[in-house]
Image 1 (cartoon, rainbow, N blue to C red):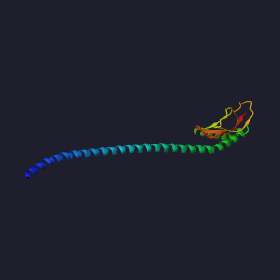
Image 2 (image 1 turned 180 degrees about the vertical axis):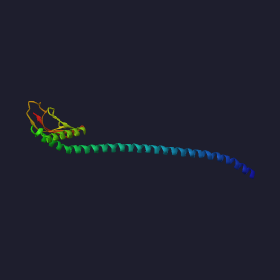
Image 3 (image 1 turned 135 degrees about the vertical axis):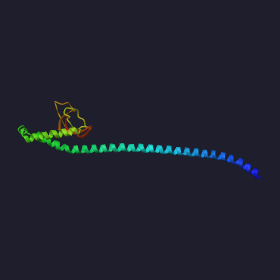
Length: 177
């Protein structure tokens, strides 16, 4: 009986060993598939995080640029009354005073200031004779005019300024009736 039992055991052992590798291969295949699924999940999560970071970086750069432009605009806006004062003072000079060397120096300083502001992309609005544009002009009255068509600017009381496409200060104008 011991020989038969050994023989039976010997026959069942290879069958069990053959079954074990098949189960082991299936388990390994399942683990591999699970690992590949997780790798794909991690990769897609990483790509999403990378895209979100890139969007954040671009948004932060736009915000920095906007803050810088707003600071520039505010500084330029604060300089406009100084330019107005310069222009009023220079406009009040008589022909005799225009020959004074000190006043000539002020004229040069005024030109230099305007040149500096122009290089910073600040431009004056001179709407004389142009159609009234409420986005760039502020009408403070109407008056009859033979020289300018109706609805057009006939007098500029205060110059307006633009920074790029952005109106910093609208021109104060009178419009022809």
